[in-house]
Length: 321
Image (cartoon, rainbow, N blue to C red; front, side, top):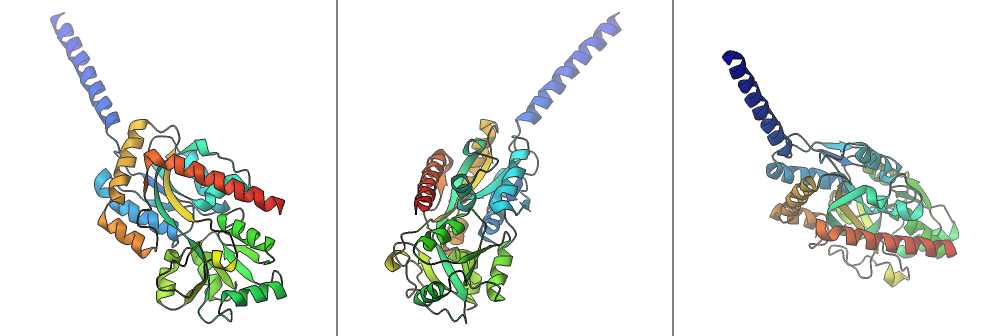
């Protein structure tokens, strides 16, 4: 009888200890790798951001963050992957302006409330680029060709419904008709220009920095109010040539809505710390992005809401023209 009682007390104590250990294990986050989804192919700005942040976050979170490229549908395929994963903090994704624009130009399967921003990481203007030896020497050459042969000039863009696509549609209202050719993988867009399969590339300057440095590409128009490329002071801004279109690019990091608040807090804190690392500021400089690009999690949703409102207003204005 005493033996049975002692055995019962031992089993109860063991059960309590096991429960405590299980609870402790549940509280430790993260305790395994966090998948970092990039809704685009390797080599582009979103991919570069994810790989830089993964490296900076690993020492802080003490787990690896394997980058998984999931290109397609202007970022929609990657978003579907993120939102199909459990809301447990073990999947995050890069989310950019072009994917955000889908909510203004189409009806994606997801909505703003399906994800939570952990930080806005990069903000930068976009530009049009041509191959170094292109016969299009200036923006005036582009205008002349586009008006003489509407649709002749092919522009490599990220995808239909994207910011790139919206910019082309705007320019069409100004009598400049181009043919947009979508490439989900950045490398394919760049090869299209260098190989002569497209005439113009819509991209952010930092994403093609290596091609600029190697004199393989050159910008021909910057979508901005002023000329902001220090090494290309002769490149016109869209405003000065009469095109009131800017649509700046941003890249953020998001998690699935419903992720426990403590997990979100841990991720957002680590991201904020990484964004203040001197190495990250060096990355922003190399990317030709705004030095004060970073917007923390507690202000990021307001930023996204404002960008979406602006995109919807722009899209609505295009439909009226």
